[in-house]
Length: 117
Length: 422
Image (cartoon, rainbow over the protein chains, first blue to last red):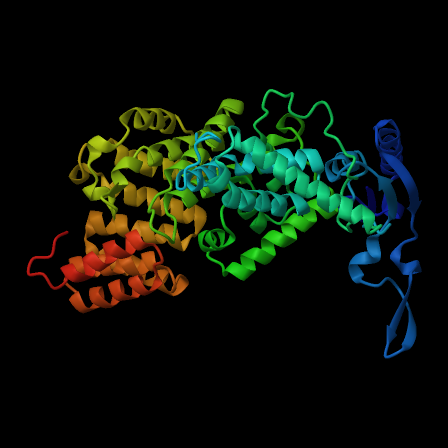
């Protein structure tokens, strides 16, 4: 089944642009290790993956009473730190959890994608 | 077991009940393995038992009753899967397709106790903590939802909603049923031990009906604790939970006499299983002080050990037990522990000291019949006859177990006797 893996926050890590070059290198290595772990794991496919701009670049639309307003910034304060996402096909939740432990120590939210077919 | 050629009108019902208690969890685990459809399996197994209840009394109990139930339930699931396929839709919660087959490594591990696998599933950290033990009782032992609600001190609809949500999450999030060798068993150990102890409690003090004890259910929990201890003998939780269960379960034969509840002081200690007590004491004596749930279990085991050591009720070291309960209350903050501590303190220091500790419990657990019963008992001993009368009456209003009700009615009557016993 498909899982949406959201890199929801930096956790104990420094934000990317406040990290030292060494820290950035270590994070890149772990992102690479994650891709390799997914590629070699049977039944696992990375369907999509993107890094996202930080929350200050976000634009939020809200529709109330039929009227749409456009505001600057992320939907919720907690979404400020969202760093990127993966869409992964995997056999079960335990597999996804195990693989995510390879990633840099982000706070990560895993959501199953419901099968609507 | 009754054969097909010798149908008996009364035996099959007994057999269905026995099979239900003994096999529910294993059958459920096997069906989940085979179909991956927890959302269909539970209802299907319930349907199979319902069919058994109508057919076995007429046709006779099949030679292999669990296999009959398994096959019947499996067919029900397959029928539902076909209906889904014909309707041209997959269930929204379908985790894996209906063609799913278990992989070869399942069941071939050092531990292939299906029920333990089911417990591990129920104790998955992705499930809300408040649902895990409840779910395990429902799925592994087949405990009815209303009984689980009573154990967790919540209304039945609350518990039903909690269980439904947890089952939906297992299916929707794709939480797998895996062999214990593949999971980080230790990280789920607290929850597993909690589940086993709650299952034991469910068998030990059912709240409704005529049987005071269901020792087979309690025995099933003991069996799980033994298996767990064999698997992970060095974990403090598994040692403590086994010690505790052995020490408490060893008293089962003495707890009921002629359909009446026999409380600890009046139990005939020769009816305790002394070989089991020795095994429990040996384990309890070696438990290292720890923290968290392991420490909770250890303190409870030490309390049970104090009772087991006393040759007669009068020899019980109540001061030591009261001290252990004080430690346990500090670890748990539980009002039920405070209640038990009040009983121990009453024995060690007198009923007034016990009543003083009980006051706060009554506010926290206003609808608990045991609180009212203990208050009645202590008030009676302290000579507050009207308080005792009101408390026993309140306990009778709140208690649903017939055997316990008979006991409470006796106590209420004893207030009017010239020399009340106890």
